[in-house]
Image (cartoon, rainbow, N blue to C red; front, side, top):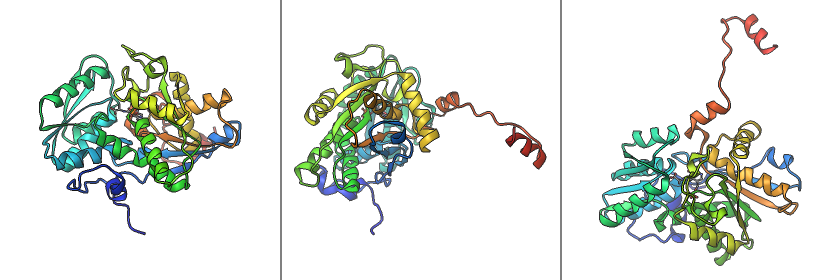
Length: 354
Ligand code: F0G
């Protein structure tokens, strides 16, 4: 078997990418599609549930798939700087690929909390980090304005179609592994690029005759930041899941089309439901994800309880980012409280038998 060489090498013929774009890679993609160990047992209906564990990408989130393609195209058109607005993961990924591709990187972060792991990544990779007051949507607008004015600057948010091209490869991988599309695909939705990209991937695979089943796309937002569910922008989005704290998603239209064309829908889950799923994934599945990544699992639990998922359905849930991205949330939910002992077996036995 040929060693994995990244999403451009694996899927180049299916990506709308200029021929002179280089084979840039940090060996992103090829992430595990893991059968659930416990979730299906806790739910009715004998469901077949798989997790697409995107936290195992090089920078710890699904963003790397799209970023590598956006940077390959930026290199082809000789851009020298990249900019993005981000709740953290896009920034971390852009900073890493900018380092690899030797571009300058500017990241615009919303005021308030960005998970510490993501900030550390952006800083380590040498990005210029700018905090923009107000919600994410302000930073997003500013990034678009800057890129529109300066041709040497590449905007690497998912409004850049090359990002979507790269991210659709996750759907290809799922279909390649299962031999077909699943019945349902659940995922968290923030700026709405990822649901748009997955649907593009499944659609293209169906058109190419590679799959017969196109999944219903089911997107979940956090209750305090659910503009698509409510049908209007949210001016002050609030949720513990900082990655998806977005009130006016850039790819809103693409997300609506994905749900409509696939027969899917959008829903919202509360912060408590998100944190419950976050804990469950870590404790019962051995999967440490960041809070936003648990929204799809919380969403599936809700829809099963409502009776919207037929028994025996095959379901894929994307786990979008790694738990180490947000160490503060983890230590808040499960405070590490070591029990101190001296170096004797007697004391150790006393502790474990207590
Ligand atoms: N999960 C995680 C961990 C994310 O970081 C994001 C988005 C999403 C889900 C939602 O994906 O935006 O394509 O609908 N993070 C962006 C960022 C906004 O800046 O890192 P989406």
